[in-house]
Amino acid sequence: MPLEVRKDGGILWVVVSSTLTVNDLEQFSVNLRASASIADDIDTIWDFDDFDFSQVNRGILESWIDRDWPCPARRNARIVLVAGSDLGFGMCRMHQLLSEAKGLMPPGQLYVARTTQQALGWLEGAIP
Image (cartoon, rainbow, N blue to C red; front, side, top):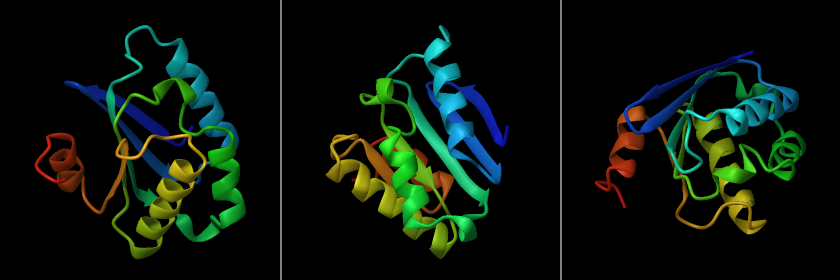
C-alpha cells in the first residue's frame, strides 16, 4: 500500500507515495476505524509531497470525496493536506472546497498547506 502511517505524539502522519487508488483509501479507512490505538478525533497530516498528481482529475477527486474520504468517523479530527507543488496544492484545495460544499467536512476542520511546518503551525493555532 502506498501509505506510510505513524503516530507522533497527538498527530497521525500519513505519507502518501507513488500512486494511490480509491481502493487503497477504502482499505486505509477500514484499518483506521478498526484500530483501537487511534482516536477518531486525532489530528492528522496527510503528506502528498511524493504523490504524483498528474493522473488525478476532477472525476477521480470527486470519486474519493463521494466515498467520504478519508474516513467518515473522523469528522471531528482536524486534517491537514500537505502538497508543495502547485498542481498538488491546487488539487488539495479542490478537495477541501468540494468536501466542505458536500457537507463531508465542517468548515475549518480541513486545511491545505505547502509544508509540514505550515501544517504543524495551523494545528498549533499559530496560523488562522
